[in-house]
Length: 274
Image (tube, rainbow, N blue to C red; front, side):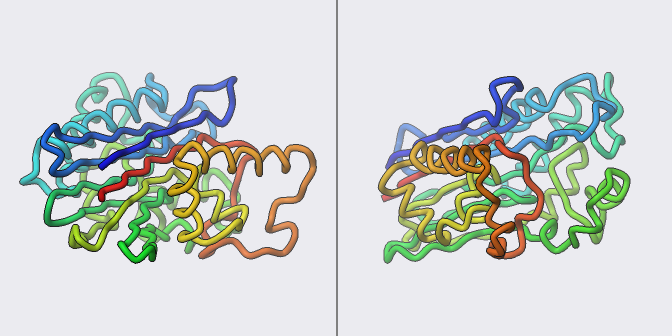
């Protein structure tokens, strides 16, 4: 059993808002991985004196601790507890009711000798590879189902942020944990897994370099760093004037990619279970 965790900032001029961790017990009987992608506020007004990296570090630390130490809790229960703990840490100084209060997308998994649990919230990605090499992508597609034109203004996006009929992220309300995409898979059916922020998932979703099985092939052969290096190379080509795939008429995978920035924080955790 081994894990690899790699994260790259989108720009050297600003802090990386992603957060990642992998925890393996000394017994080797199981483990947990967590990837968060902090949601960059479109304007400075978010009602909070803390920045997004502060939030993702607090939430990610709580998720890692609880998922590694509390096997009796489900991942949804752990997410709710971690959101509550993080909210309590700045409830006295910040307006947690603000629609843009610091928040993050979540991809996490936990396994033992019998099962692999997963949880995904918003546009993070979790990949599960079977012993035969087939790959299942666990996705939360609610953001993708919202038409482009609906999200073209800050006001319109705010009306859909953490609202029914819109999309959900981990912010200050623990109840959002019940809306995450969750499930379990027999441990014998999972050879390896990977948690990706949307910046890492660009290799498939934005640039269309392959499907999720191809993406896992890159992880198997080149590791998490190899995947992120490929993403950066593709972004650099765009920086030099090459068109985005959509500008060439290529459809976005599953309709999930329609809004982008040139370089994004990118994080990947790869775990080989057997």
